Length: 432
Image (cartoon, rainbow, N blue to C red; front, side):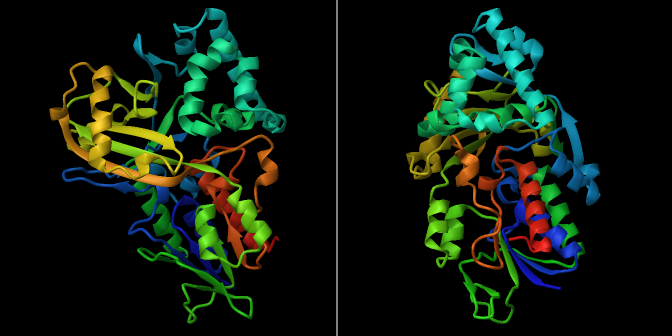
C-alpha cells in the first residue's frame, strides 16, 4: 500500500483519487480553493437554491467517461437532459439558430449548396470518430481543412469568427484534429445536474472520502520536494512523505511546484501554449434573448465571444427567479481583461446588449460576478501529438495530468475525468 498525494480537487484529481483509494492506497487530495470542483465549481447568491458555475458548463450525451463515473458513484439521480437552442449573432438579422440539421439547411448567410456541403463534412467528421481515424487531420490546420471541405463561404460566415474569437493570435496555427474533436464529440441534447456541477463534484468528493481518502480544502500546494529516499514532501510536510504525487494543474504551476524538473522537460512544458477565460455573469430581472441558450457573438461588434443565457436551459426558479446570462471570452493571459476591474468590464459589456435586445436597460441588472482563469483552453498546433508530455514525468513518483494532455479532445469535464482515471491506471500499473 502506497501513500499518494493528488494536487487539485477538480474532476481530474477527484476521479484519480477515487480509483487510487478504491485500489487500497492511502490518498490525500490538496485543493487551494475552499470547495471541490475546479473550473466547474460554482458560487451562490442570496435566494438561490442552486449554485451556478463560474464558467458555463454542460455535458454531452457522448461524454462516456463522465457518464460511467456518475453511474459508478450512484449519482444518476442528479443528471437530466435538455435540448436548448444554440446559434450565432448576425449584425443584420440578429440571432440565427445553427444547431441541428434543419437549422443549418435554413441558415440564410450562405448558398444552399454550401449549407449542404457543410453538413456533409460535419457528418463525415462524426463518422471518423466511429472508426477512430483522426490522426491525419493534425497534419493540417483547421482553417485550411474547413476551407477545402466546407467551402470559403462556410469558413468566413460560421467558423472563422469562432476560431478567431477562441484562439486569437493562434487561429492560423490550430490544427484540424481539434476541429474534428469539437464536431465529433458534440450532441444536440445537453446534460446538467440538479444542484449544478457543484452538486456532482460534491457527490464525487463524498465517494472519494467513502473510499478512505482525505480531501484538504483551502490547502494550496506551494512546493513539492523529493527526499533522498525518493519519497515526496508536499509543502515541506516531513511528517507525511508520499510515495507518489499526481499533479492535476496547469503546466506553469507544475513548473513552480517542482523547480528541479529537468531542463529539457521544463522546455517542453513551456512550449505548451494556452488561452485564458474571462466570464462576466449578470443576473437580470427580464430575459435577454428570444429563447436562445448559446450564441457565438461577432467580436467586431461585441467585446466578448459567447453569450449564454443559462436560464434558457435551466429553470430560473432555482435562482430566485432571476435570468442568468454569461458574457464570456477566451483571451491571451496578457490581455487587458485580466487586469480590468469588474466595473470597468461591465461598462464595456453592458451597452452592447441593446443590440441583442433593444429594450435592454442597465436597470435590469440585479447582480454581477466576474471570474477569470489564465489556463482555460490549450492551443493545439499542427503535429501537436508529438509535443504532449506523458503522464509520468522524468522524476520517479511524480505524475502530471492536465487539459494539455487530453488531446485530440478539447478541454471539458468529461475529458478531465478520462485523464484522471488514466493517470490512476498508470500509477497503479507502475508505468513509466
